[in-house]
Length: 167
Image 1 (cartoon, rainbow, N blue to C red):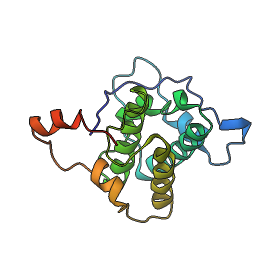
Image 2: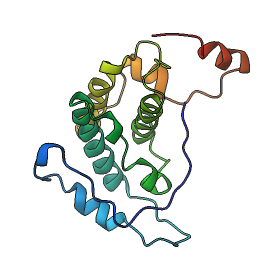
Image 3: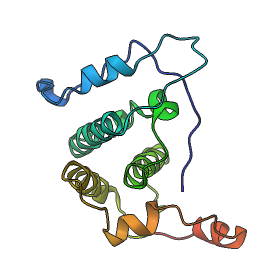
């Protein structure tokens, strides 16, 4: 499982929509509402609906970027909104954990930290999660559940052994 620190949002963050496509989803407006000035010590937690819209749109955007070979742009909105993303909703947390781990995997040049999840599998899984959330269906795909649902901390031996596994 991955965990990233809480960073206050950059009020100037404007997500790029791949290939100049129009933002019909309202992602920019969601981000503008959520953006807080630098120096703010308190950050409001997003509502369920705002968080759901946010994660769906960013997962779909990043899936497209990944397939276009622009993997360096994956996760551009993650750190800015980590502190505002609600932790109380199980399905949203699966999506958030998945996104953070995808970013981590990309940062390490896709070494296959997650058995069965290869570089080309990430966009497919991202779209699956986004589709499940947008249709209010439970995320039950075994590959996702096995890797991205919190089940407690594994033993030190298991974690060390995991560094030597390949896809």
